[in-house]
Image (cartoon, rainbow, N blue to C red; front, side, top):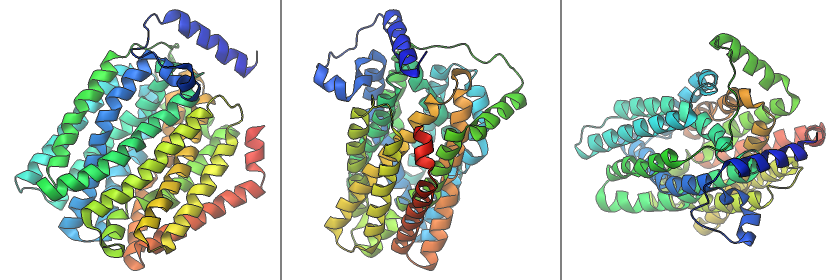
Length: 431
């Protein structure tokens, strides 16, 4: 049976088994662009995440600015971000073994509750004047451990919410609300930091998790499969690693994710330095620049979701790579504040298109019983490598400049994409 026929059959089975109508009946034109919104579960999920993720970006912006205030150093901003992301490299692959066997819904509720506690604790320490760089780094590392479990769980739980047929719509929307929150959160964080102080964004982030926990608890999964009965963790881990690196498509997806983490993603980490030293725009300018990237990512999510039913999605990876790399190269040589916003928006658009498509295709290429393990390997090589990218970017920016670092990384990403294209990799992946 063809893959397309299998997906149609699965969708008919899902429609039969789910008896709950979506809370909001959306017009057909809207659903043709965002098919995942036809699902009750996904509407609830997005409602909760829309609030929770604004809090997440309040936390991210406040954290970067807090380290900048404590140290004034690009090195320590990069190092703190690197340490916070280090658990993704250490724990994510191993977490995938257990996520495949556990109830993902209950696991997500637990991770969200722990992250809320960490955020509120950090906020209290800042407001009471007891925060130090050591405490910020320690809590960032602890938060990273929880995130290393939460992210692969969340991404693989999306299949259980909407099924495989609408996964290609749900993934970019999930990334889109993440980046739509980045459009609102950083700008709001700048206002809150300037007006009320740097502690309150952390408190508000902790409170925002209430909405996310409520939404996840309200979901009724509609796509299920029999978990892997193998109870030997090391054997399960070995099987996942062999499949991920032995599957040609997934192997190249991993390479692209790895290159993006090292070469492209650190541009966000360096933004406090750029806002202050290049554009002399302060906390408000920092939030404004990140918001521009978030707006572009939201546009990228809309476009990618609208193309969700297109069978050959490989081209979106190449197009996204080109748009993001070229935009950030131009950003690195630009000194106009308004133009910087436009280029960051284009960069966000391209990154979202590339990352969403990679995420979707890795999940669709993975067997049900192994999806969390394969996604965990991919996320280890993508998200897990971001600490290394942030650390290298911080060191290079300290020795040269933040703008030079962004430009060099983007140029090298463009070179990686060109080499893969000339070797026929994108043609092979689409076959």
